[in-house]
Image 1 (spheres, rainbow, N blue to C red):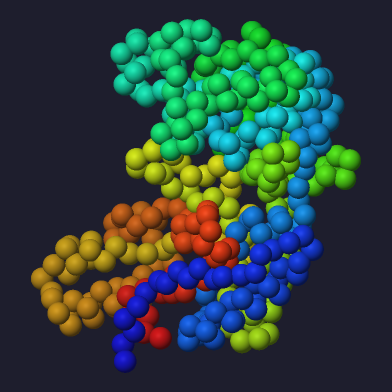
Image 2: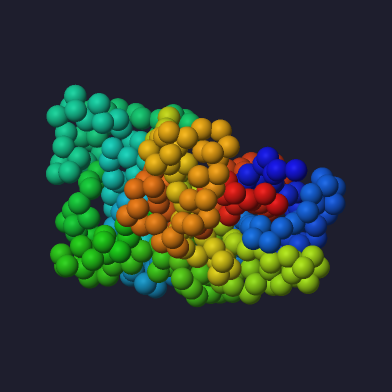
Length: 398
């Protein structure tokens, strides 16, 4: 019988993961038990993906605000620190900010506007237009911001992040000054030692600050790159990708996961004879059309993955073929013609008009986004995702 189903994404329920758990065994057993329970079989090139959160938890990769404070003080001097371009997030940045402030005498907090890097709004573009403010050039202090825009609460969280972050800094024992600007060098009028907290634009920000005379320039990726008093760490990303664990600690992004993805791949091959691909994923890369928030607050979508997930899709657009190359065909003749075109397609379709409109992104970003949407961020209890049929096409019949 002809196959009638394409890609399927399944959330796999797992036990609650604790530090020291054998995660590879748990992932493999959970997937195989789900297959038996639901009556499906694994296939070659299925994708098994685990969220970064359970990997970091199994690794015990946590750090306290005291560890953050000690590292910040050692690397940035402990006096006046410019803290620029943080995202507006209780989960992602608030605990980091507590530690940063605890390691400084004064924090000059410079917020980008009208929104942060991932789209959380401080003020709308319409309000900027009405006030005659140019976000590319104008700088505001807190008094000017309040005079023009008053209190602005986040539409989803109900938090006024300007007040919230100011209070966190003061509660940690530091003085606070808040300014609003989008040119990195503006902070150098207030502080020569700068911690830039942006994620995907951090290399450019560091370059601009260094070029304009900053004495010390670090990013979140330079804090906790090695253990402090026995804390966790991340050699590659530091504090980037961290999440709130408790009111006094963060869970860091997982450390190297290469051994884990290879172990899961090997165990599945041993138990089923199927060659699957495996990845550890963080945030998906997509934008919310209502809140205008770009989901990707992690430094990358794929923390680690097996070799078969390298590259980008190489697909033809069926509707283009149907409306152009084979516009005079229909029924079985059209199906046969398109099937033949798919089977004969070149290995690299870049520049070929028949591929226009297909998604020009890396496989890991696409699959990781699918996994993130499937697993959710709440109480579904499915931190492992099984994606089947992702590499199928119109001609796949088994």
